[in-house]
Image (tube, rainbow, N blue to C red; front, side):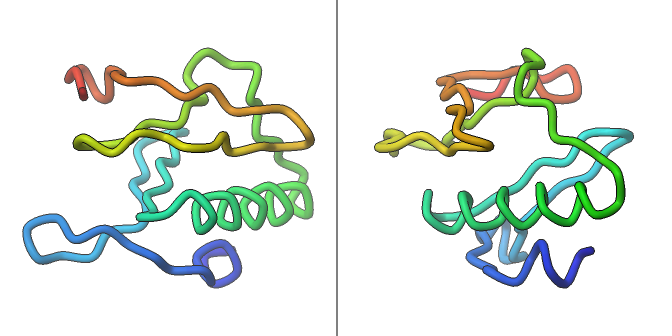
Amino acid sequence: MDNDVNSVKDPVSIHGRLIDNLHFADDIDLIEQKCDSLQQVVNNLHEEGRRAGLNVNIGLPKTKTFVFGSTKIEKNVELEGRDVDNVEECVYLGSLQS
């Protein structure tokens, strides 16, 4: 699954390391520089998950689109015709991100 999901590859540099996802327990955080790249990775993750019998539940309150820094989200990421909520801050692993 990793090869297909990460085939778009537009990672973010954090302290010199290129990062395109974070995993913790049952959370997967996808990190991309551009909305179009993020949309493609979300589509790939959804398709590969379905093949494995898994679903991305965008109805959960923790499924969000978040942008670090001063960049504004110009368009929504969609999954199965539904917009993923855009937020300006979120709590991740107990820390407020804004």
